[in-house]
Length: 445
Image (tube, rainbow, N blue to C red; front, top):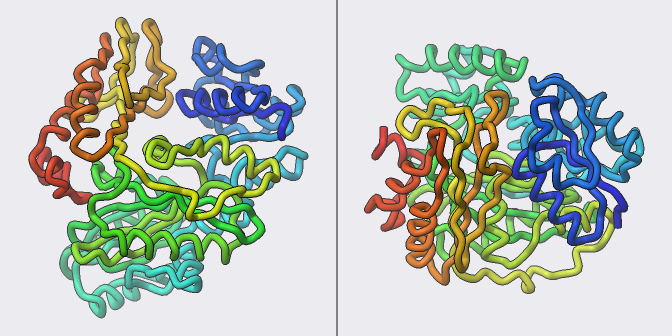
C-alpha cells in the first residue's frame, strides 16, 4: 500500500479521499490555491502545499506546480478526484513518467474515452449498444445534415470532445438543423479548443442511467449496479439515486454484464462509469464513459456497502479485486442531493460568507461537505458546497428520509438549491418515479 498520497483537488472530494486514506493508514498531502488556505481539506491533511493563485489555471490545473508539490512532499501516488485534471490523459502520463502512481485508469484509456467519437467506436467493438448516428466525427455541415435526414429527426448534435453539457444541441427538423450545428460547433471550439462534431439519433424523454464499474487492469472487471441520474438541468446533474426505478432485474443484469465485458476487453484499471440513455421500452444506448470516480458515487456505496475510494486506492496499489460479482449485493435505496451555492430560481451563483451552517443527522443520513460556519464560498470554483445522501430500506423510505434531512439542513448567508430539492422530492411525478432528463424543464422550467 502507498505510504503517502497527494490529492490534486479541493473541497468535499479532497476530504473524502483524505478520510479513505486515513482509514488505510496512508499519509496525505493537500494542495491549495492561495485563497483556499482556510479550507477543511488543508486542515485535515497531514501536509499541505500551496500551488498558486486563485484561478484554476494557475493552481488546480497547473500540472507543473502539482508535480513539484508531489516531489517536495515525497508522495508515492496522486489521486485526482473528479473535475480539474481527473480526466486529463496528459496529466496521468506525466504522473507516471515522474514516478508517481496515478490513481485512475491509464492515459491511453482516458484519451480513448475522452473523445466521444472514439469511445463510441470502441464500445461498438465490445458489443455495447450505441445510439444510431455518424461513424465518428463528420467532415462538415453537409455530411451531418445528410446523416440527420437519413436517420430522421429529431437528432442530437454533439462535440466530440464535449462534457458537462457543452457543445450539445437538438435539431427537431431541417429548418433548425443548420443553426443548431453552427451553435454546437462554435461552443465546442470555445470550450474544448476543437470544433469536431458528430450526430446521433435523439432519444426522446430518456432516462440517464449509469453503471459503476471497476477493473484491475489485467482483465478482471466488476460492476456495482446502476445509478439513476435523470434529474438534471442543462445536462448538469442535480439529484441521483440508486438503484434506478426505470429498469427491470433482467435489464439490470444485462446492462451490468455488457458493462463488465467492455471493462474486461479494455483491460481497464480502477474506477469508471459507463453512462447510458434508456428509452421507455428499456432499450439502453451507450452515451459516454467517465474515467474517474463520480460526484454521485456515495449512493452506490450506500446500496452495495462498499467504500469505492478505498477500492480505488487498493487497485492502484496493485492489490487484486478480491471479490466476485456475486459478492456484490444490492440492498435498499439511496438518494443524493447536490447542494449548490446558487439561487434556486435562477441558478445564478451565490458566493459569500456562510453565517450559519447546521447539517442533518440521524439514521441513514450522510453529508459530504467541506463547508462550515464562517466558511467563504469562493466565486472561482464549482458552486457545489455539500452532498446530502440518505439510505432507506426502499425508495419510499429514502424519499421520506431525504425530505426530513433537507428540512434540517441550514445554510445561512448565501442562497442554496435546498428549496429546489424540496420541490423535486415533493413532486408527484418524482414520487411516482415518472422522470426523465427533461424533468426540470417540464415541471420547473
